[in-house]
Length: 319
Length: 299
Image (cartoon, rainbow over all chains, first blue to last red; front, side):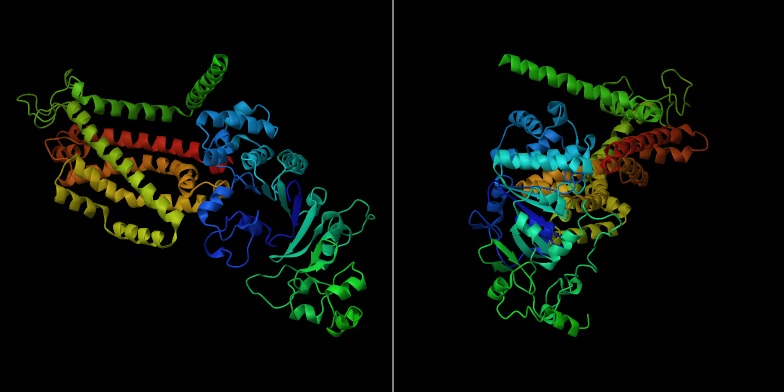
């Protein structure tokens, strides 16, 4: 949705970056998606011919990469770099591009933009480079901006400012933004909607505040428990999720979170839950034993779910 | 409008001039004396070779009646002495530089361009293209370089042109491998993805993102290869397949002179010294280019 932010969270290796790059059609070779579709303004991006998707990339959707140290071409002046999209799509002349580059660098609050435009990436700090990346991405005024862990490689002190800048750009250009992060704190304040990923699948979605207040999927709940909070008593150890995410190359039946879930049942081992929509709530989850839902709703969306037998079943399975 | 134009110009020109001076200033530092000497030496040799026709030199191919095998530093007219036919060693050395440099630099430049194209194509497209190019390169590499040179020399005859062609053929696989390896390194980097994410066509990605980043290391390597190729030209000429007598090249001068090494060492030492100095200088410059363009240490 234009002007809104979708936060995409999940731990390392859960497929956030792959999803982001798939949307941008930047996955090559053996990893090409063969199933499903990704819709952008009603058109399926994945089935588009290369030529059409290239016209879309940069102009309608753009991406800010995780590591500003490697995402800028080390032998290209920043001015040329920032206006690359403009020159590809709008055929800007060299002269116009130079003027535009200075304007763009100014827009992302880089001081002395004239001089900076003539410099090379290694002459800038990480935070400044990420600003340049953002300027590059928004140069053509995209409708969708995908920010893939834009602050992970930066110092904590700079993170907030880069996030503020992204927010500012989103408002100014009325873009939709997908903010990818493994850090719930980063996403919590800035996202309107949340999507939680685990082992390559989306396991819970919904309005950010609702998901954070009352998660349905045990994984989301566990993730929230791992977040440091100031109101915890002294000496309380921070929770962690036991075990590791499953290897996606050896797929097993059942829920991918089953080995780490405290609510896991026999059904969880046998059958993977689909993404289930909650009626009247704009939320969905993939779980057989959702949390924070009234029995009435559970009965409605998971008919025949053995809610009351949960404890017995867990005991049966020797846990 | 004019005010704007002036402001533009006023800003750009000093900035650019400032850069040039900054680079020169950085070059002129103690510890860089070797580099300065090297650059000066290469410039001198190249200039002399280019201007050989206009210099007051004797014809390097015509025998003289008198003054055979004059040692160096004995006659004002012939500071480097004369050879067994009374020909001026200075003239022969300078005209020889022309052949040696043309073969060395020409072959290296041609091999760099062809190797770059082949290597980047192999590294970027992978798959069948990569396999086919890989097999071709392996096939070429399986012949000893000297065999290639002999075959080329025997097929189209001696002379600077054929030596240059032969040397280029020998050097192409070296550059192609380097280009392929660097393309494999660069292609998955995020800035290449970022360019594709901006909708850049494959052509733009290759020429703006990959080639410039591959080229720096290749230019540095070329500096070393030029030295090797000049040496190789010497060997081919030494074998009698390269530049044909009486036309001089450093290689055939050494080859010719070694017959009289005992009695008249200057016949070998003059071209050999020039060869050694030039190769040393080229290596110095190549090393400097490599250190300046090594972005990995400055990211």
